[in-house]
Image (cartoon, rainbow, N blue to C red; front, side, top):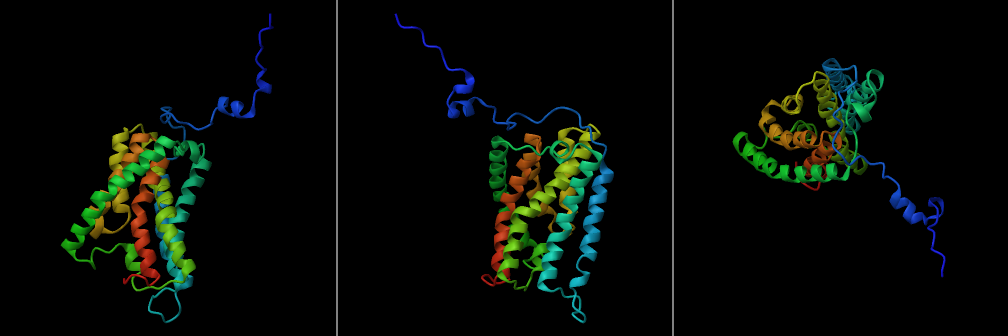
Length: 267
């Protein structure tokens, strides 16, 4: 009789099979229900907003040529667009490190494919009401009054290709990351610390996100934009889904700005 075959010990199994047996290390489940342990709250959010406003005022001073009647150089325009937003997000991340457990835990920055798929879906779905509302709003107030703050800043400006590409990437990818860290990361976390419900956090963060852009004439449009982004954060309990939804929403405006500052499309 043949001796029964004895399986190889685990350390001698084929490498491919070993990899299949190893955990992926990716958290596919729902967000943790553990109460937040961070020691920052609404004061941290207000500090970050103050940093953004102060940076918006002072960071452009070196880029105003003498006698230019307040006009900024091309580099100054890009600095005014990029630096305040990025600086605010960096301060928010530092706060989570100093007064909490760091951004990964405090801001719920955990990636999973279901979250990414949901963020993409809500971002695409949100484009429909956004585009419809944008056209209706432009018809109601006129194209000149419907322009965004970024559009007004870049109106009539022609940028070198490198700066134009940087502006495109900032509007499409970087700004959504920074804004989500501040509004649906730091602000949302402040409400979690006070044991507010998820729906309360969704409503307040959506409202503050809308008015926080300081564009009163576009408030209804910004509200329509904010709802699907906030829903991504609400439904997953994590930040990456809202970042993805925000980036999907910003792609078309970013592309329009790129074509405008490159001279391909009239302002």
